[in-house]
Length: 388
Image 1 (cartoon, one colour):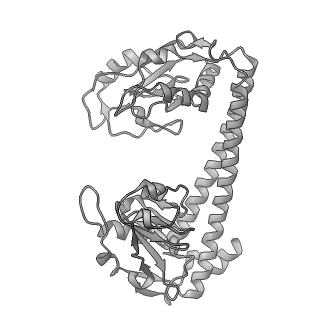
Image 2 (tube, one colour):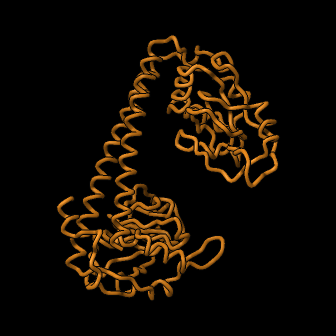
Image 3 (cartoon, one colour):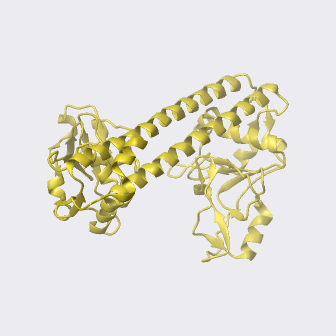
């Protein structure tokens, strides 16, 4: 990859020989529509199956999932989300299938652009920002083909395109290889967790009110929103077992102090989503400066108990049992009484201690791999934008 980068010299690209093309010359819009039950294919791809800023399709549906006319797509085509373009959804197809009517199906014109380069071009800031600019509509802005096809873009000569495509796909291979390593680590962690939990007697475990110093929940009130002040976090701030501190909901110092009389979070406490994102859980690892609403709060000053509760609450076994107990029809929730009735593993059980040691090792490994993937994706994105 280093040799290829030196050949191309991305930091000093000479664009004097590059040419400008209308998008309708760069790629064809494939407009073959079909009813799902007549499509004679096994795969349906909706925009919900495509991840933002990812050229690969990692989830699939089936034609029986949907009704109404859909579009055909074939290997090598790129599905591009024409609705809400700011979500940056564009992924290459590797099968015969059908896809959502809220997307375009693009097929590279090989006389103008190397088909292997098209997916990366579509993910460039130049292209994506232009798509946002030409989108029309309020709640669900959409791109019209009549506006898109006239847009002009600067492209490198074909001989450079091939080298650039090789470089970007080499970066993609690194990312995909690390994704496999991540998947294997996560699978092994789950297998280890299952083995240990099969040896642990949860039914005769310790009641949560005995295990923790206190079990309570966040405020039930709705403090007045301020433009600045102290953050008020909800269940939505717990994402992938971590706490996202971003919020636009701030409260006054007086309200902050009042809320925290009931439920002041501290380091080592466990936060637990009680409504909406029920069961999302995280440990507080640093001294907090926020208040909480719609979250369970398990208070403990004991780091070991904090780790045990965290790993048990996020275990597949616990989450499965939790989902079977959820209340509510339109919006699921759990009560404070439910949280206070939970049983937790005994910290004096050697099986529990061995499991937590293994779980911590796997979490550290998984975090390392995820950080490596994030760094590689950031580099790939930088390379794409240096080119285009």
